[in-house]
Structures are given as C-alpha cells and as structure tokens.
Length: 299
Image 1 (cartoon, helix red, strand yellow):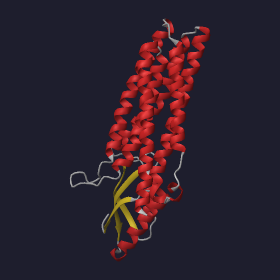
Image 2: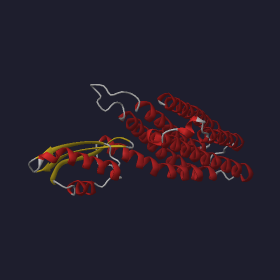
Image 3: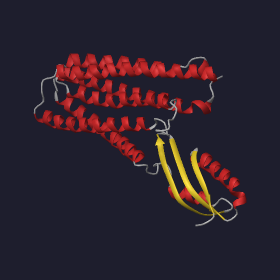
C-alpha cells in the first residue's frame, strides 16, 4: 500500500515539475519579448507569471520538505523553507508592481511604438503552454482513483492550487493577445499601458496578502482562520477544567497549525481523559493536530 502511495506522489511531483518548467519557459519568453517589443504588458504579465512560478515552486517545496525528517537542530524539520521562499517572492513582486505603475504612468503620456505581432505571438505561445499545463494537472492516473483521501489531502490541495495558478496564467495570456490585436488593428498604443496597470492592480492585493500571511507565520502569530477566544472558551468548557494560561497558537507552515497551553484541573486523576478530550476538540473543530497540553493544579 505504501509503495502505491509513493508512486502516486512521484507522479504528482512529476506533473508539477513539468508544469513549472513550461511556466518558467513562458516567463523567460515574456521578459525577452518585453525588451524586444517595448511592451509593458508583457512585462506586467511576466510579473503575474512570477507569482504563479513561485506558487508552483512552493507546491513542490511543500511536498518535498514534508517528507524530510526533522533533525536535532531543526526539530520542526524544514517546513519554514516554504514560508521564506513565499516572503522573498512577495517582496520581489511588490517591487515589480511599483516599477510597472511607474512605467505605465510614463507610457500614458508618451506611449512608445510597440511591435504588436511578436507580442501577440508570445501571448499565443503562453496560451498553448497554459492549456497544456491544465491538461497535465487535470489528468488522473489509474492508481490515483484508489488512493487514501486522508493521507493525500494536502498533496491534492497542492495540485488543485497549481491548476488555479495555471488557469490564472491563461487569462493573462489571453489579455496579452487581445492587447496585441488591438494595437495591431487600431495602433492604439495606450492599450498596452492600460492593460499593464490593470494587471499590476490585480497582482498587488494578492501579493500583499501573501506577504502579510508569511510575516504572520514567521512572527508566530495566531492564524487568521482561527479565533483565539473561541479555542480558549472551548477548552474551558471541558469538564474538569478550571482554568487555562500560556495559550499559544501558531502556524508551522501553510495548512499546519500548532497549539500549546497549560490547563488547570483540581482532579489530577482525570488528567489523561481531559487531555484526550481537548485534543479531540482541537482536531475535529479547529483542525489543529499538533498540540501540547500541560496539566497544572494551580492558576
């Protein structure tokens, strides 16, 4: 059974790698194309592509590092590598978005002449690559239909997230094609700046949210999807619990939350039953499976 699961995982990693290579190839093509054609739209879409190249790379990192064992020096393993890469990606994209806004502003008042035919061809190339990526990620092998849902839910989410990234890329490629055709038929060069600023406006909120989430995880803040007071009250409602202190909730990496707390009870003979009940509540109600509960007899 474990061999079958390992084979499924290898197949998924292979799919992600192929799509990452295709997406990165188109990213490079857009960078080169923006220099050759003077198109800011291609540069802006390259920034959009960078978010998705980063997303695909993070999906691979998440699968790879969750399989690496913890060491005496890194007791949590290498989960935080995903968050560090995510933060670096976010900072780079915010800087790129600022540059696109600046260049877009300049191009509104002084629109440069743009080679629309190469621009449209590059957009068409991107559309083909993204359609291929969606087909690769959408396919299921025979063994994947018989997999265990519990053991592969996280990897399923990675594949699903990657598929959404590629779909987002495809919309950007269509936008480049449409902009190229408008410029080719009407010589309305301002369309390039308009599309670029619009794409930068689309990228910036996503990137800002990703950066805030990354910083919150690195600062070991309470996850945004978890209510601190709700968890505290749920623990206090367990029979035999008279108090709680030093309650800490944080995220190890995306999708993996942890909790530690000192729980007070006057009847220590029920300590194990109380711990088991608290852990059950945390897992079933709040999806927290990494918890450390210390029983105390004082407040």
